[in-house]
Length: 375
Image (cartoon, rainbow, N blue to C red; front, top):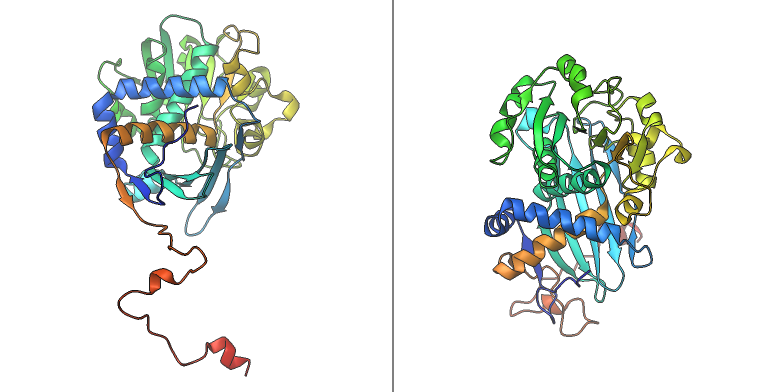
């Protein structure tokens, strides 16, 4: 993996890359090409994952019910001798309906491991959707045979768009069958998909379940409330069905029937994380199949004839890789805003140096309230 470039070699300057910069990058390289590059990057780097070089931790954060159900959490990864990446993400499922905001809002920060300086802050809301789609694509590519697919999608929100787009880059989609508990969202999906993809066949949940036996791949990407799953009836699933389970991103939130999970080969992206908040939170560790790393590294037998479930909770290493790809293109194009968030003093032992300007910093002759209280 190439070393992340610094914005300025001898500076603590931070490059801020916003959604307009990401839009400009994608306009320059093309949406399909950017997705292809992201799929290739995830497939190559995760398939060659070396735990001696890349250290990651499962995400942690705050889950809360006030003022409403949501979370803010952080997802760290370090490439030894190179970079630390920390993505912070908020998940608030009521955002789209109540505020016309995405349910997921995210930002990624990159830190240099030589100095500890913050080199980059970048938009990660769109980037998260793109990398989640790309992750599904790389696993789908291994878990399914060649040829066109019948793809089913449960949940037609933002994530559905990138799931469909990414999978279309590794397999031709012959038919696209979709459903959502909100019919209005399902009916607008066609307008949100990139050109060239088949028109989605919108059906209600009952019709979708009847059509499951025709599907080669299913993506579940819902905002189902905690305890309300399953979102699909898989009793008609054919041998070889592959499922990308994307929506279980919160303890207690699941999308698939438990009996189906126990009969399928479950592929966790991050084992310890999936056991807490993925589909696998209802399984024992011994019931899990090979990890995403093992599948992409090719150390397991072919999976194309098995019923497989990719338990995609979102890996912080994927965030590092996607942020790096974005930043590489942005620097090539001269994008981003450089700011001095961490201006260093000439004398590293003098924290007040920057306060000594042409105008003296006013000082109070009064002692602090704490000191006065102590007499």
